[in-house]
Image (cartoon, rainbow, N blue to C red; front, side):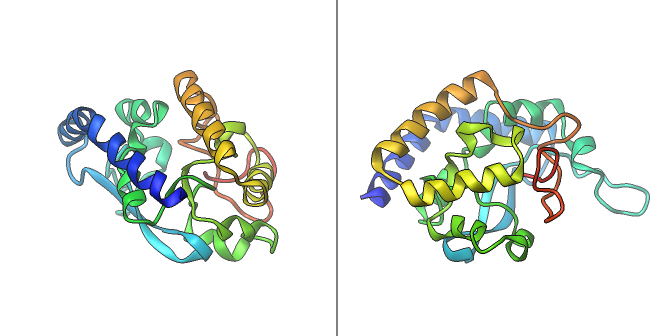
Length: 204
């Protein structure tokens, strides 16, 4: 049932947001150049990797050694605007159509984090990851990694249709209020490590 709802809602969202998709695509091409999409391997259900799609929000600026500058230096005001209103997330509805994501579920993080999770934290991968989730409507990037993982695992144990509906409604409110988009001084938040599970530690 959840898969059917995901598929139908994603088709409708992509259809009604098609004018926005066209405008954002043109602006990214003009302001940031190619590629339009940011693609990255992320862990899906049971940790199986898939390619996540987002609209690109950063430049390709390099330092004198040919390495990418930090996210904070490459994130443009236009890119920050896309993130603030979650417009960069729109291409992920294609991932939902492909069955790699659900609309609601724990956010898919980085592949490199998989070996760092405790046995309990890894349970966040027992359900399909989502575009938005319980952690996103309860602090997003303003909470610690430990709190975020606790919320993700709580969702795994307590999933229901009505909980998903509540998360979707709260997500709309959070996006409009632009709450918890990033930690001060970071494009999102610091990278996650076992030593940094409290507030101020981890990239979401």
